[in-house]
Image (cartoon, rainbow, N blue to C red; front, side, top):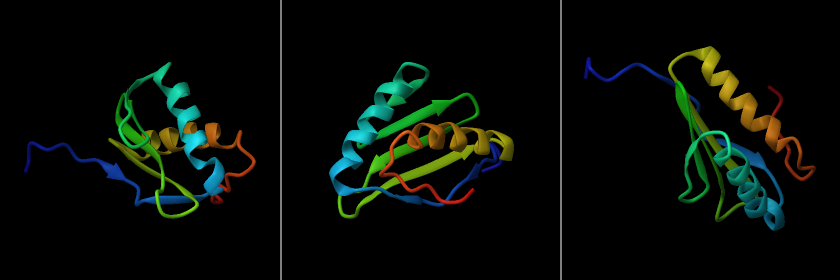
Length: 99
C-alpha cells in the first residue's frame, strides 16, 4: 500500500439538470475536453489531467449530471473542478452548487 500515491477525491457530486438536456450537455463537454486532454469516453467522459482526473456523466435514473474528481493535492482538485464547472456554466439548465 505504501507504493500507492496519496490522492484527494470528491464524493459523487450530483448537479441538477433537466432530463431532456443532460445527455447533450455531457456530449458537448466530451467534445470540448477531448480537444485539450486525453479522455476516456465510456458512460460520459473521464478527463485525464496532469495530476488527477475528472469524470462527468449523465445519470440514467435522475435529472442530474454526476461529477467526481481526484487529484494529487487540494489546489489541483479545485482547479480541475473549476475547469469543468466553467464549462457547465454555459448551460442555463445546469444548477451548480455554491462553491
